[in-house]
Image (cartoon, rainbow, N blue to C red):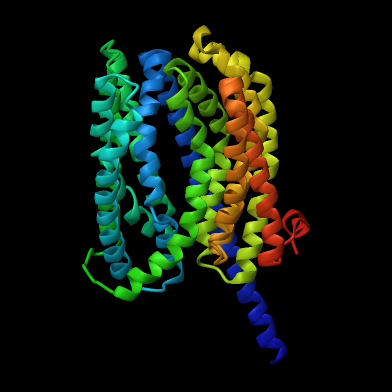
Length: 437
């Protein structure tokens, strides 16, 4: 190759790198703003629900929703990440991916409702008949959660790196929920049923917006391809194993607490979890961008992206969790009131694990972008043993404090395992992640 051609190639490569860096910064910036918005909305709705319903009602709201959301997670089949990956890699046409995901989503919705009609009333047998009735009503909203626009069409937009549209869909449900709670508070109502209705309305608004934005980018056509459906499921079940394990590790404490402790204690623990989750906006944004961008990149560039995301997540989470540890007692007392001060200790215990949880989440999305979605399952499966053993030993004796300690230990163990797996399966060691290759 001549010197002129080498110069032109170098210039073209430099321009390509500059364009990529520019779009990466823009997409990350918009996603980070969205995650901060979700953080603010989550904090508002958590405080509003706690003040409207009190510790008792807040615990009942958690109990009647957590079982349906757990069922949704179990039958999700990793389709969200699979749709993003297949769209980014352009393995099939958009119409084929949408048709297959819609068919799978419809089957998932039927399965969740069928199982839930047996599980939810049984799980809520210790609650009032009103709580059980609302639990079944919330269950019937599952098709909105799985089948409509708030889910798979939004993931197609994410895979197309249309993160502005994806972020709008992500914001729709919590915005509608926040508006609903604001109206309930203005009416001075303390009805649990209204809070459930506001949550369902949020899911519906997300679905409508998702399909509208998707239809603007792509003409919706039914185009069945059995190979596309099979490929989505094949990739999806691998990431599903990790997603379910991750969900169990994060929710098993609340699931068991809903069975064995009074609703008031569950409400206090839910507040502690909500407070620690406020730092999740940055790893959340990093995970979304890493999966979307990494699925559209070659191996070398995707690896570099994962390393950059890892370093940023570690630095930010250590800083944010350290600050939250200091201000947690004041923050809970000021925002939620004296009746929630007993949430402070479990909140502080959860914070070290929160650093590990957010960092591991970024690495999971990085592994999915690198084509190894099952890696998350190995890490979370190992951590699940810590979760089960810790809850068995500590929950009966120490209640919500024991649950917090168990969760923090399990999250930390999961991070240690995923770092080891990155080295063994992907050839990317801790030194590579921290300093780059």
